[in-house]
Structure formats: C-alpha cells, structure tokens
Amino acid sequence: MKFTILRNELNEAIQHVSKAVGSRTTIPILSGIKLDAGFSGITLTASDTDISIQSFIPLETADKTIATVVKPGSVVLTAKFFVEIVKKLPHEEVHIEVGERFQTMITSGATEIQLVGLDPEEFPVLPSLMEEQIVSIPGDLLRDMIRQTVFAVTTNESTPILTGVLWNLHDGEFKFVATDRHRLASRQSTVASDDMRFSNIVISGKTLSELSKIVPDQNVMVDIVVAENQVLFKLGNVLFYSRMLDGTYPDTSKIIPQSFKTELVLNTRQLSDSIDRAYLLSREEKTNIVRLVTTENGGIEISSSSSELGKVTEQLSVSEMRGEPLKIAFNSKYMLDVLKVIDSEELFIGFNGSMSPIIIRPNDHQLSLHLILPYRTTN
Image (cartoon, rainbow, N blue to C red):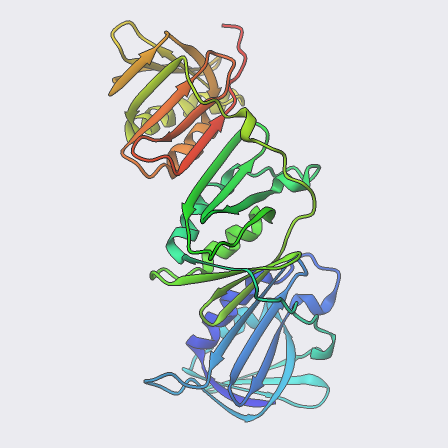
C-alpha cells in the first residue's frame, strides 16, 4: 500500500474513528485503526465491538486534491501512537507506505516514522445492515435530544439496560427517555419517518455522548438506519454503528403525574443560579440536599446548610404560583443537571406534596420533561 494525503483531512478522519477504539481491550487488533486505500479514496475504521466508526476520505473535492493512491492496500496501525503522530507531523503532505510484514513508513517533510502494522485480515468486518427502516433528523436536533436526556442514565452496571437511552418512534413522534430510578429525562420531536414505527430500542448513553461529538455543527441531516440489533448513523462521509442494549426498558409512563397540587412558573436562570449557590454548601455535607419552601408573600425560599460551614438562604420571586403551600427537599445536583438543558427562559415545576415526584419542563413547550424524586428529611 502506498499513498499521499493531506495531513488535516487525515487527522480529522482519525479523530472521528478513534472514539471507537477500545481503551482496555484484550484483543490487540481492536486497539488499532484500519486503513484501506483504494482508487476511490481512503477509508479509516475503528471498533470496540459495541461501536464501530468508519470515515471515508475522497481523493478529491471540487476545489482540491486530498489524496493520491499509488498502490491500493490495507493495514491496521496502533491507534495510541498513530493518533498522536499524525497530529504532530510537520508538513501538510503525509506519505504512507506499507512494506513486508505490514511495516509502515510515515513520511512528512524531513520526518520519517516507522510503525509496526497489524494484519488487516484479523480486523472485524462491519455489520451489513438492511436499510429498510431509516429516520432522517437534523444534526443539531439529534445533538439536543441526546444532551437533554443522556445525563439521566445510570452509571451502575448492575442494571445494564438503564445505562442506555430508550428510543420509541410512533406516528412521526421520536422520543428519547433516560432514567437511573432517581430521576428521569425525556425529549421528543416530530421527524420524517414514512410511517415507520419502532419501540424498546436502547442505545448506550456513552455511545450517544461519543456520537454527539462528531455530529457536524452545520445543519445537516443525519440518517438513522434501524436494524435487528444494530443502529447505523450516517453523517456525510462518516458511518457510526452502535449495538443495541439487550433487555426490556421499564415502563416509566405510569410514574409521571398528570395534575399537581402546587404549580410554579419561574425564571430558569434565576433558579439555576440560586440552586448553584445552595449546592456549594450541600456538596460539603456529601448529601446535595437543598430545600424549597413556598412563602406567604407568593415567592419561594431556597436553602441549604452544612454543619461545618453554615447555611445559605435565598428568596426568589416567581411568575406564577398556584395551589397548596409546599416544603420539599431534593438533590441539588440532579436539579442543576436539568436546569442546564432547559432551553426556555421560564420553566414550569409541578409538585404533589413533599414525597411525590417533582416534574420540571420548559414553560413554552412540552417537548421535554424531567422528573426528580424528592428526599425524605427529618426537618
């Protein structure tokens, strides 16, 4: 194999696929990135068996030549070194040549680097998916839906299904749900689906976080191909394969109340800043407990305390308050996670007493919903 390629294009493709390289893999070939050079372009592939990412670099675009292939072929190079080396090469052009026993020479300007390559025949073959079920979604919307739900997955591997985000698609409504049993986040949107339907598709939260990093910033469409146990994301010249998580996701619909005894509408930023200040003390107690109390003057009081540091109390005005007086305690870290992803100037919070789930959603739409379980406290 022998080809010349522009460093920036090669580096960009490497950055994409390297997200699929297993950091603690026991299979040596999976610690590498596979390069395939052909007369249509250069393809880079990485996989950790759960996710696989492939990036294609065309030989030329409308305005420039990107690569020239002298001799087609394949090799697998250890990602740990290949990623860092390409990033630090001194010249715009990179020459890569593979000799006997996959010895690989990388030349850039006056720099020559020799790497021991691995046999590409040992690299796993990417899944072949029937492209019968395809959903198209704007990239920025997909990123938002991931961002507004993925933080609520559990990190406890004893319940593997809850480490993922549940996907359902019915009548053009695409819905994401995540929960760790203490909180829940959901986000839905209308998408072009051609009467396609699916349910109980669960994708790892870690996988979705990696995916969101490579979804292009500009408003491009992402095609999502849903197959039997794999999902493929098509992002221009990048293909991102993910294995679905096995198991049945719990039915969370029954825990979401439809009416409330106490309702508040207030400024998202003001509440976030107030709870952030209260969090500083609650964090020191290792409990993260913050209390919210409605006041007689039609506002609320946010407070937290630390046995060593003291107490913080803050009065907040609200835009609207309806229903019964309330005193409730909750995990301030969970609340801050929600407030960071609320995309509305004002938010709605619904309560059904001090021991029932707290519901938070934007005040100007109902596309996203968040639930937090309160704390039982003695005072």
